[in-house]
Amino acid sequence: MRVIIVALLAVLLTGPGANAALDLGEVAVGARPLGLGKAFVGLADDASAIFMNPAGLGGNDNLVMTSMSGSMLNDVNYLMFGASDLSPIGKIGIGYVSASVGSIPLTVLTGSGSTQAITQTGAADYSSSLVVLSYGSRLSRFLRGGAGDNFSLGLNLKFLMQGFSGGDATLQDATGAGMDADLGLLWWCNSWSTLGLTFQNFLPDSLGGRFIWYPDKPNQRVEGIPMVTRLGAHFDLIGVSALYPDPEKALDLLVDYEMSNDQVRQPTWHLGVEYWPLRMFALRAGLDQQAKAQETGNGVDNNFTLGAGLIYNGITFDYAYHQYGELSENAAHYFSIGFRGEDRVKERARRKLEKVKTGVPAPEIVPKPKLMSFSDVPDDYWAKKPIAYLTTLGIMDGYEDGTFRPTQEITRGELAMLLVKAKGFTVDKQLKFTFSDVPPQSETAPYISVAAEREYIQGFKDGTFHPEERVTRAEAAAILAQFAGLYVKKKVNVSPFPDLPKNHWAAPAIAATKEVGLFAYMSGQGFGPNMYLTRAEAAEIIAKTPFAKEQIEQLIKGQKIVTRG
Image (cartoon, rainbow, N blue to C red; front, top):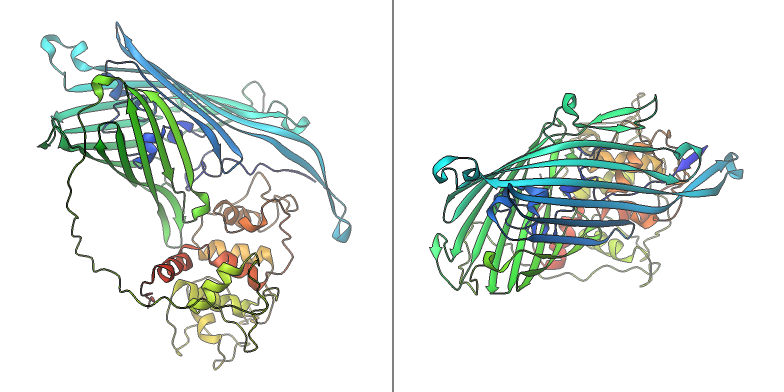
């Protein structure tokens, strides 16, 4: 059967609210907002307002521009540009965002069993783009007597396009287009605070707010674009006209609250701090929450961001570091060049801040233990670090002869013990779940009981658990998706690995675990769903889950590791 490998835009399609009609304007907004955790709706004082809150264009009469380009995850090429200038009717702007992946291999899986073979038959390219037409103006333009000068209104018209090119007949004309609109408001409450409100993608389907695949074909498919509401606040704490006036110091605090009409998408917060220690240099930090599914329902990822900026004669250069999910491998770096005018740059310099006492006790510092090592795990072994960390933490064990046996296949009983230990749960001899083939006095029995109670691993209908049965990679993916609380779709339209049919029973779970990087070590390889999971693979995967990762970070920092009851 034909398999189309389209493992792309992973960093963009984050959270359970991911939709095929992707609004690229939620991602490529400029390095400055990204460094502030995308808490920008209440500020919106540069060209990024085109994507975040068009009402902000009405607060700056200068020409403003921003641009950003690069590559995410070494696969997704993106380009963003935005510019706005004053006109007789108000501030008019245009924005453009594109993301693309080239040379996506098309393969054919032939034969069966040991004679199966994968042959590449061609390649296709994927692209997605967004064009934004913006308008912003203070309400005083439309009211008499200068009324409404502290209010601004903004509107975006957005046109979305995405599709494939090249490939074979299955991808010909596989394109789509759509449109929607944003409405923005900004209120300058006083000299040191502003409030902003946006309704992104607010057009109903009846007015054209939708995305259509195959628009010129009888089999066209219509998809809605979820509306996102964002309420933002900006507080100028220290500065020229701030809460604490100071011509030489500046500190801004930004807070955004975001919610969507997509029932799966959890409300999120965005926090940002911008500090100017010099007139031409800024430091930024933020928290960009993104919705995700988790073990107890819908939740969020807390993505931390950092940034820096330079400005000279109104020309800006901004950098942002953005974390995506729990895995450090998914972090991205962004760079923007733009212009926002000299008269919008306040006199800013070094500030003096006192540390805020949170009342949270400092972590107890303990001596850092020496990492475990094994005779059969050499220094250059691909999984040496996760093996050393997990064995030092006691999550995994070596053998009495000083070996770890990394290639030994892991069993269901061993995996149950590993998962419970990775969560840091304590176990007792009282078993809530028992199985006929698990002796109550065995070492794994209490761990299997906890794993079954928390539904990490299920037993069988006949009351057995099969603790000595080896675990395949496909089974492991299904177990780990449940364990990590990942959002698993009912089915996938694209195979996550070249040797895995998209209708394979575990394909959705494998796609979910791959998307968050649990199988990153298999990049560029086949998945081998029927191959058994080894102890080294289990160490590599478990070390990337947020539960084990937290313990590993505490171990590295020398902090006391707290177990959960």
